[in-house]
Amino acid sequence: MDSFEKIDTPRGTICAKTWEGAGKGRPAVVIAHGFASHIDKPGMGRLVDLFKSSGFGGGCFNFHGHGKGESKSYGRLEKSTISLGVQDICDVWGYVKRKLRPEKMVFYGSSFGASCGLWAALRGGISPDFMILHAPVTYQRMKPYKGLLKVFSHLAPLFSKISPKLAALNPHMVGDVTASYLDTPVMAKDLQGCGVFMFTDSQDAVSQGKELAKWRKGAKDCQLAVFEGPHNKLGHYAQKPKEIHDIRNSVAIMAALSHLGR
Image (cartoon, rainbow, N blue to C red; front, side, top):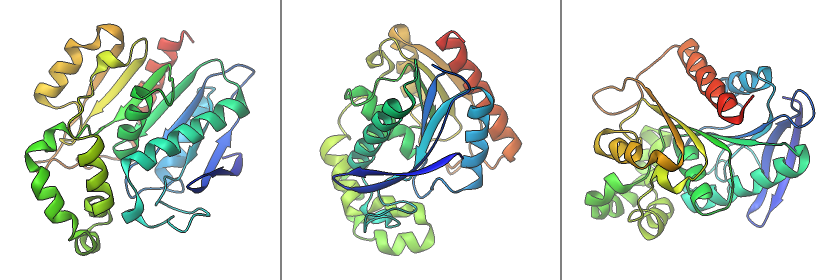
């Protein structure tokens, strides 16, 4: 990627990388990674290359609690919450918009990043022309387990030794979700005028069963495309070769360009 920058925020300095688009006024993308991931993973480099080859400028960054940065909480997943993620996206969005001055802007988010991006858009923190969402979690399907979430949250340090992603059960995250997000429905109708391309290869996604049907019914105010994909019996992402990920992302980028009139 072309440059490394530090974006100062009240929560600490965000570690970000940005690049210029191919020509004046080209669209820009802000990419948000998933929980326990970071921008130095090989998959992020391939994704950035796909956007660059399509003429996009843009930026990617490490969420609070992830990867490297100046804040003492960087690299500490137990400090990460949805609310902090939403603020991080808004800060990076504004930074990329000011620096690159694109005509149109696209948001790309995976899992945790997709959820934070949805909330940032619904709450007016960002105004994307198109959103590419990989398995966004909306939390409504977790409502019956609200009590269990609070119990298990105190065991998060033990769980995180099994898998880093289980650090998401920490009290900070669970308290944030139950207080601010668990009871609020997220629907496509609230993204007026925005195009949405959604991947559906995980049971933690908004795009499963009845919830997907509601999204399709309410999508009259936005353009909604759904890419169906496999998941295993545990609801985790089915293992796929990196070539499949790249093809899927290429299709999503083409959908974005079509929506933007490119």
